[in-house]
Image 1: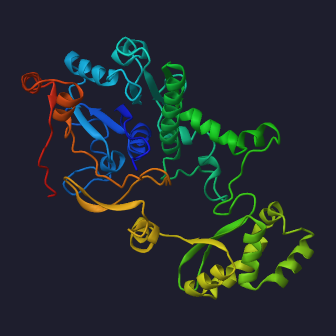
Image 2: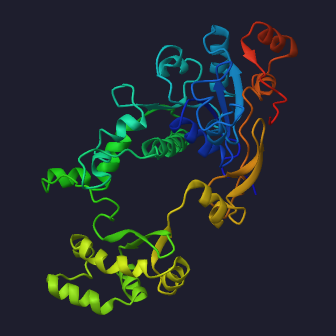
Image 3: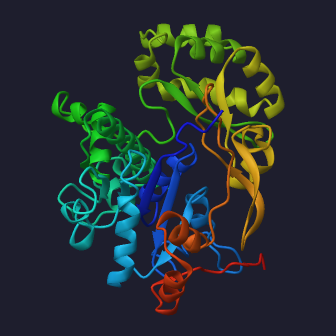
Length: 412
């Protein structure tokens, strides 16, 4: 069996999260993704977290399985090399470009179409008008930060996960594959625009947040750590383990009640409130009263006992963990999970890394692979992909147009 995207070649010009993640998503399904960077590395080459030696764990994590081409992007000769890479061999497996760089000048769609008329070009933007935006400036503008955090404060709460970057990155891969299918059917290439803020606004609409304002004339209020629209919250066990429980479905709710042995108390509470607590919305409305029954039960039971009772009654729950605790305790973040592999990353060392979470029954799954050393594949790309000879390659290196990078990068 072969990886599902084997043979497809994508040229990537990128920085930070969304575009590199889009390219890596394709690489982890077997596509040949060539990332070009300026000599010395791009804007994200040293982004934190970093090792003690200053090597970026972020960059290594976002570029697994790609090939690296290090080139002077500012030089006309360097730009010509990139354009030739984008052009490819004229077949349907080449002529595909993914970037979050501005679509103008030599990177304008119409300019690149001069070398490849059926070009597929996926361009990630900050906002639909071409303005600058990052996940952190988008998230604050679309309501989620204002609805996150404690209801006792009016201050918004930012969160660590760059959700819109991640969703946009995945959507860029979907967009590219959709455009590729269209070209294979019609022979037509196209420019696809995907704006980070549009992704966030669309998601707010998909989740009902826009309609909540326009139809119900209500703005989402903070609910702290409570699950919106049903019953769920974090509670502390007797031995100090914090646990999130979710009672969204009828089975999940009945499992909580049965595991805790509070059937009679819940019935009494429902009668007192005149509420049908079998309905998820009613559980949310009365969440604080329900929590008054749940909190003492947690305080009187140790985590191991809680797990046994919850597992026995099919309760949906999970412990709160730090990244360290996840790595050390969660078997989904271990070699027991076929998605995970030990890789050796030059300049960093050996560590646990993830491949694609997609599992194809009819195609080979690509294991986790290290990211390239910056410029690692420059010589290979020049000779094998662009067909240049030793003399031409030597001249490009001598003129500072390309660089092969650090070939023997140590781990110290």
